Image (cartoon, rainbow, N blue to C red; front, side):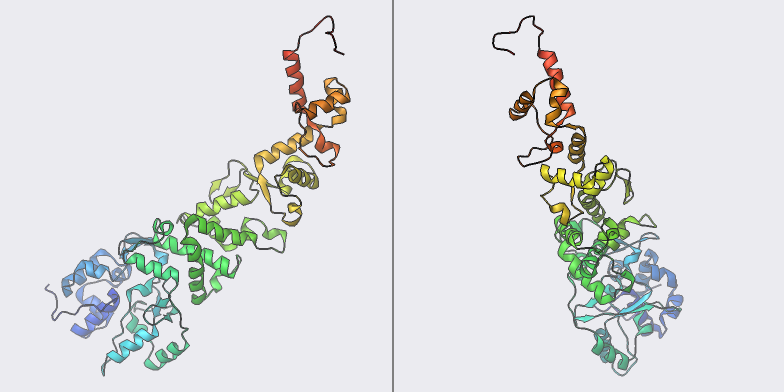
Length: 448
């Protein structure tokens, strides 16, 4: 079949569905559904963006397949789609919601003359993170899901009348596209952006930015389902300040959440501190990845919380403990928390008295466990003579000359326990003396 004449090219930025709707009315006076049936394009195939649709639409219109693909998402699999060389999961598309800029549609309305208005749907309106018209600095109107035979992306079938559009335009807040939206549009156009974002799928980069931004801006426990489009837009703006700087910036955002005060102990763990961000990564009902933010959040948690070995964190079992808090170290060693806290503070692992102010403060697990185990084995200086067979003066000289070391090096007035010497060190000293010493029959001159 030869393509229909005269040529009817798509308008600038017009989506494939919008153009086919206008093309069918222009050439055949048919609605979109009727026209698709007439030319043999299944409605569902168009909705999905399958390859056959582009080929068939090209054959009847004379437009190149490449041109038509720049106006629609393209089907790759049941879960993955593509647009202008970028791949993403289907959740990045809003194919069942009606999205439009009232100023754009009013412009279409005015340009249609005396005939029926031919509204033009813009391609980028279908993407979840696009919420602002860059031409009119106006928030896009996005309705709930629609039902019926007409595709939601066919704007002409769902557009309000002129009076309603004018009212919506007056109500629409003036705003600029968020930094995240600008990044998404620029990336679709082939421009390079921040490396950390560019190195992952565009939808994963977008979602990570919005999730981090939402928790920073509205609190970690924010009810995500109650956020408005304007609030999600703000979340994208805030989140981009961190994700655009890569791992370092993301850790800055996580640090902000970590340092916020929490009213009760139940909110001091990773889920309480990071809230919806943690839940988004930890509790998943499918195998869809969340992107590299997962590893950054995971490492931050391991660096900041006393996560026990064997814990399932983001689908991986923690092989060994990295950090201890005073409470976890006390439970692990069986030593009272105050004793543990004092020991950590006097040893320099914790700044003195910080554990009183910030009970979430952590220390490296290995050195901390070793310190407390030494403390448990410590022998007071006064009892050292019983273990190695010397006088108290000799025991003091061994410590003063660095042959023996107290568990915690401290010049203050610490109790005997802190000034004690590890029993292991005493045994090693005895072993060395026995190894290098030689039995004699007669004492040397001057020896006692």
